[in-house]
Image 1 (tube, helix red, strand yellow):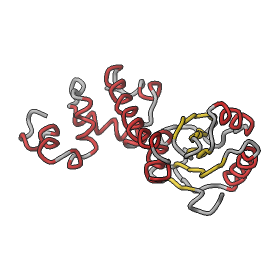
Image 2 (cartoon, rainbow, N blue to C red; image 1 turned 60 degrees about the vertical axis):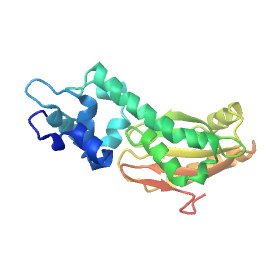
Image 3 (cartoon, one colour; image 1 turned 120 degrees about the vertical axis):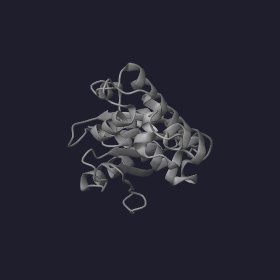
Length: 222
């Protein structure tokens, strides 16, 4: 990195032109700071992104998924996980202060950051208060690459525990395609009926793929 002209070094480039001017590998190289013996930090950053499949998977990773990646020791993995958590909290804070659908795009971004990197299917629920402000996001069920088992009574029990007035359902499609399936539609209606019994509204069901997020409410499927 020191061999590059000053204006081409990621740190100097960021300070002069802003973070948006940096390529993905340049941004990651700033976080990693150092490479491996025989591998510069810029090359290492590019290799990590290639192996992970981009930032969505990297920032959605867990300590267990980062551990096997050569060049990401405990310190660097911890820094990546810390950045991921800061991004989550930055997106969550406005939703805790205002109704979540004041900014639907923020809800999608938040759920994408939470779910897109998982290798297996995860079903999560955004629990909201009576004014539709965020109370809690719970990842409730984890499944295989193909499906997950969702238990309506557990979703109802958790909604009552949070004193929720409404929920947003969400799950990921590890295959990458975010199109809702017929099974997704059936599950949504099942949960909607169960939650109606305790006066909890289902506002949406968000499906997260890789690089795509679909709202079933926007599709008229609720």
